[in-house]
Length: 112
Length: 183
Image 1 (cartoon, rainbow over the protein chains, first blue to last red):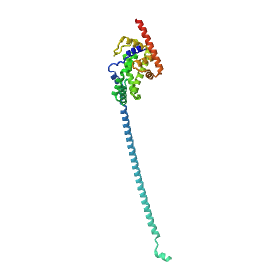
Image 2 (image 1 turned 30 degrees about the horizontal axis):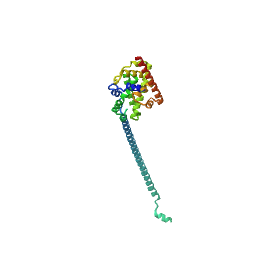
Image 3 (image 1 turned 90 degrees about the horizontal axis):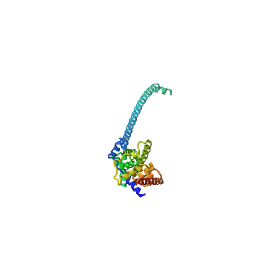
């Protein structure tokens, strides 16, 4: 068996491919950007989205707070106006009732 | 392949996965002789062998992330090359386009003690059934033992041994008959 095995080893020696083989393989590789660049771009886009959405939400929150404050201010003004009007009314009633209730002291003594 | 080369291929593999094209070119250069030689011994056609070897490296590039180490890469290349060779031979048989005996000479023949006898033997190897041919090429060109061949071809070790034994007996018989005819 050894003789034929030696002959086979001799006949089946490795051979080099024609010159420029590796270059031809490299030329056939698909032109695509490395994976890590793709991941970096995706991370940057995600970060940009987070910042944009957060600032939009913050802006909306601030606007709502502002509107609420204006509403509260308007309501306070209405309440003050109502209160002032009520006070005017009470003052008038008090003034009127003091005229009606006015009694002469001599009349009271005479009754007693 | 020496362990130093396998370690180097492992380093190149890590860099290739990161997108380093020059590292992938290094992997091609370190393994081109093995892939091309297996393809040439199988197909006995320089142009077909180069095309097939290029396709194997392109497939490797597409599957780089699945390769775990330098040793895995070399074993993967052998397995894919042999399987592609078997497919190509079967396809060629169906199409009957090229007769094996008409196959052109290699572009870079190695120096041999007796070129005529070696050529005769290579023709005989090319006439073996595909699986036996793959086993003989991996055993005597790649110096792999039957366990490694069984792993590459996904078949039991005993099947590899019996097919190898049968192939050697067949080749010896052919050589003996040829020797008798010549004498």
